Length: 281
Image (tube, rainbow, N blue to C red; front, side, top):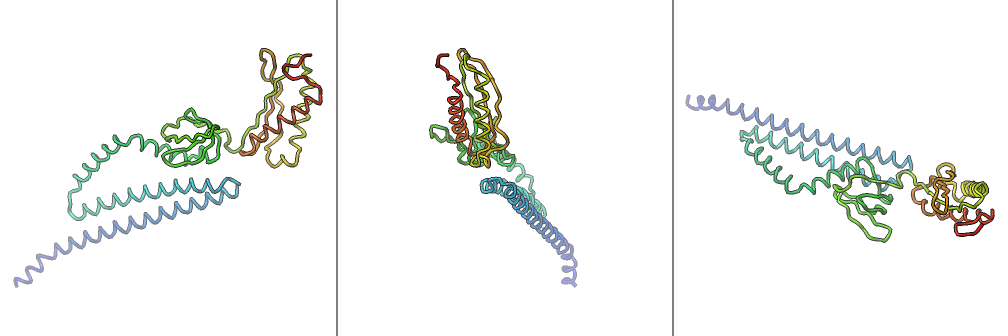
């Protein structure tokens, strides 16, 4: 009789333990399934973006690496949050008071935030730089008072090498405004100073002829986006007036296109007997 009574008295505890065990298993099952779903979605987004980049002719290697960094960061962050919440729920089901843990985590979070404000700021800024595709490796940019070519991009820093060869490591949190001179295409701009006594009509006709020959050159046609534009007289100086030309080029062809245009325009003006600044009428 005593044994039967003990068994009956123990049934509620068994039922309670079984109920808690079932809840814990359900929590773990839901968390694992959700984590796998997040990983699957991130992986498919990454593959889709890489296929789109290759189809559009984007520099898929760099684009893929940056996108992979963003996707991995999102995947890891969501998993940490998910498993952290699951651990607290499991501890609660085990009968532990998680209030001190939550309070301790809050205090630790505040202390970490105060001690690593700059680091967190840099990482968050770097995340959005990568996510929004504001700049890429090999882009020529002006940022934080520095102009140069982007050599490397990370979540915390962006490395820019200026025209003197100096490499600048810029914390992403310091980047407020990005001026990207080579995003999608570059603009080759040539400014031609002309003396006031020059025959303007003859000069413009010679420049127009040089631009037309340039844009029809088979060696340059694949690297140009649209026609070369003669913008006319754009400013007046003390001794000269300025004529400006512009043409869209591939990202890596800007400097070469400007040099080629200057040479062609110089030869065309010389052939048309148009005087240069300093020459007498």
